[in-house]
Image (cartoon, rainbow, N blue to C red):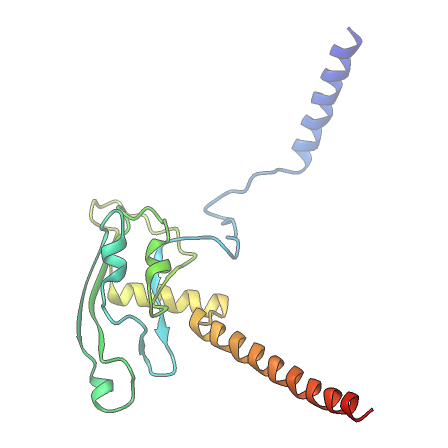
Length: 187
């Protein structure tokens, strides 16, 4: 009997604490912030150095997508002909059907050009059956927003900087090791 009373007192105390401070949010009025590693809908990234999308329309992401929710086509890059860009081809048309996308991230993993990311966008519902088909301009807008909000740097640029730092550290260590070895030989 004593244990039952203790249990009821614990329930009563937690009920009063819950009345003071709600633990839920009123969703439309107070959106829940997403975590940094949250994987929302895919988006295309923009190369600010050349002022063009990173995507070349190679279709590797499309071939590896388990739901085949993407379609794309490529064209010759006019900036390459002018000598402003190193990309020979560039995306002409890109569309993702977000109703079919399962947010697996395979497209991001297989992309060789850092052209597609899993953005933080997750509130894109519509009342139309095909209303969740997102085309190239919208995908680029989502990608630019993601790049701004997260200070996104292309993974290949990060890997290159890391490799250069490691090489510089190795070179500095080798330079420091040579005078020490020469001093030991002199003794």
